Structures are given as structure tokens and as C-alpha cells.
Image (cartoon, rainbow over all chains, first blue to last red):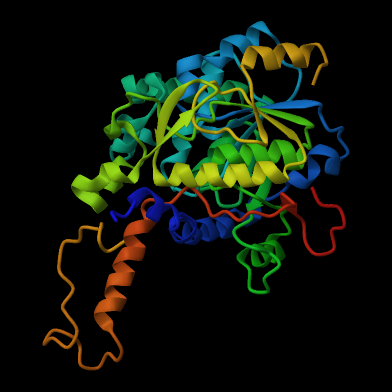
Length: 339
Length: 66
């Protein structure tokens, strides 16, 4: 029987992700230590604030630019907190939507600061990662011009945005947040089971006394965990959370294309999984990492203290603990107090 | 996984002349495992992740969990 590469790879993703990120994450945590003044423990009910009825999380999947949710958010004003993944902040600010919180977690030392506007971009080596698979058409068209615009936007609106920043974040991201006037609220990724005596999570908490939060492996899921677990919103809507690629999207324009070609050559197509979404009647496809994110999200959704609405209107994130709903319907129900 | 991965050199077979004499056990298997591990890291997500029912942990003395 022919082995299924996609299924085989999914078993490795947890370990691969841990190995890939842990050294940089812990090194960054050490460097960030002296900058920690506030933590996520001061936000939400733990910080004396009321839990909101509804919160919205904006992630940066392909549907963000296909469905343009910012337009609806402006037309049907949403009174709950708006939490964005770092990678979707540029889209929001360019379209007149100022988030309350921006979440960041990836420890990559040079890539992530791009989402905040990178003051050193023109000195860096060209990174084909963004040109090849960046879903934001503005970023793809002219990297430098987009970057300058983004620096200005983040500087203008930074003082209104709270950065929910992981101790794993790079110095470049930390410094951009500070420079733009954001207030920083720190958290540690929950790297592993803190109930184990030699746990990394336990060790880092002992060092910096910063709360550890489940990540879901990516910034979009971290943002949802923040909304559900820290702000304790009773209802959390997601948009831009595809965890996959639309039909017709070329394989070359996927996040891990270069790595998959390097590893598997001609067989790289076998690493992708197709999933039919009955809510939108489309078949999307996903790569090993995003398939793993999906599995993780579905496990977390079953445990979540909130009702989760996926208002992405695309992608592969659906299941029994997720209510798939059009964004307009969610916003109208929120306005009328029907949630 | 070795069935799929394409490397750029062949790991010498066991007991060949190129196998280091002072390495006990099965060095070629160890090298393959190491190659596999490093190769697969490239496909990993942004940050490690574990599923815990309490989304936030604030130490052992914290009674309230989220």
C-alpha cells in the first residue's frame, strides 16, 4: 500500500515545531527579560475588567484579502474587543480598522518585524518568503513602499494598540512595538506540559513570573486563545482563519513550498491534503503545518470556555465545536444582543 | 520518512570502511535520524504547542484557571 506522505508528516509536526523554535524562543526570552513591565495577567477579568460578550479575532489567511472583512466591520460597527494577529495588522490599519490588541509569538529574528513595519528592511537581504507566498497583494506589489506606509500607520496608531507580546518575540519586534508607542503585555508560550517536573514552561515561568498561554502553534490560534482564555469573551468570532489555501492557488504560492521541494522533490505534491468544506461547498488544500494547526484548534475548541464562531467564509476550519457563520450575520446578532 | 526525503549524499552502509571505528552501535542510523530531524524542522509551525484545558497557567499556587 502506498504510504500517505501528508498523514506521515502530520505525526512529526509537534516535534518539528518544538525543535525549530525552542532555541530562538528561549534566547529571546532571556533578552526580553528586562523589558517586562506588564503581563497578560493584568488584562481581562484577572486584571479587574469585565469579560466581554463578544470579541473578534482577525487572522491573515487568504480569505482576509478575498472577502475584505474590514468593510463590514466599518459598516456594522462592532463594540467588542478586536484582536489581530501581527500578520493582519497592516491590512486592518490600511483599511481604517484599528485593533485593540495585536498578538505576536513567532521568534524569527527578521521576518516578523515586517508586520510592524521594518525600519531596517532596506538593509536586509531579500527574503523570497514574502514575495512568493504573501497573500496581501499590497505587500507583494512593492515591498519597500508598503513597508514605509506600514511604518507610518503603526507609528500613528500604535499608542491605541496593546501589544500582546510573547517572551519568544525577537528584539526587532519588541523594539518596534515600543517605538510605535504600544503598551506591551507579555506572555510565555506554553511550550510543553507544565505538570512535568522538567518542563520548559515551568522553568521559564520560574525565571520571569509571566503567565504561560497555550499557543496552538501559530499566532492566529494564539490570538483566539487570548480572547477566550485571558479576556474570557463569551463569544469569539474568527475571520481570516483559513488554515489552508483556496482551490486554484498555485502550490508555489504556499508557505512551505520551498522547504517541501527541497525535502521531497517531485513528490512534494503528496505532502498536501485536500479538505472539502461543506459550509462553503469548496475544496481547499493545506500543507502539513497548517493541517496540524487545524487538528490542534479543533482539540482546543472542544475545551474552550467560549462559543467559537468561524466567520472566515473560507478555509478548512470547521467542526462540531465551531459555529460556521457569515460575518455579516454574526455582526448583526452582536449588535442586537442575540449572542 | 526516509522513503520520501531526498538527501544530497548517501549514508555509508554499516561496517563499511568509512564507518568510524570508534563509534559504537549504528552510526549510519544515527546520522539518518539526525538528517531526518533537521530536515523536518523546516516544516514546523511558529511555536511549540501543547493542549491543556486551562489555556493560561500562572504557577502552581494559582487557584483560578481560565
